[in-house]
Image (cartoon, rainbow, N blue to C red):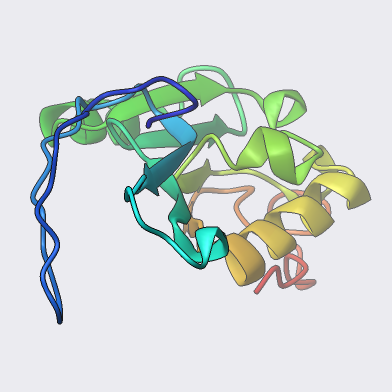
Length: 162
């Protein structure tokens, strides 16, 4: 069963030892899904071991969040990602998710000339957790404001998110 719907049903001859049954499962949409296998043998003394389940994740096409410090600055990065068959979504710093659930929709985040004050503390913590806990990629592309605490020529570095 896939997410509770039967996708395969057939009689199986079980012999002593290991029996493998190959099943083609239709590809579900991106997201998390439950895959369940169940046997209904005619003579059974332990019904507790007749079911196995697994949680699977279907990623779908990779999505990258391109965050541009100023409108238009992420165009080259987005274009390169599109040419590499990725799906970039361009946004301003305000569009950076502030929850892990929101950030989990992306496999990577590209910051293009984004000064630190453009992101909230919560957004920075979410990026840190996404990189550390979910394995989301994070790249910062330079510019006059990139990774600065207050804009051009600042000697203070962008707060580390890894």
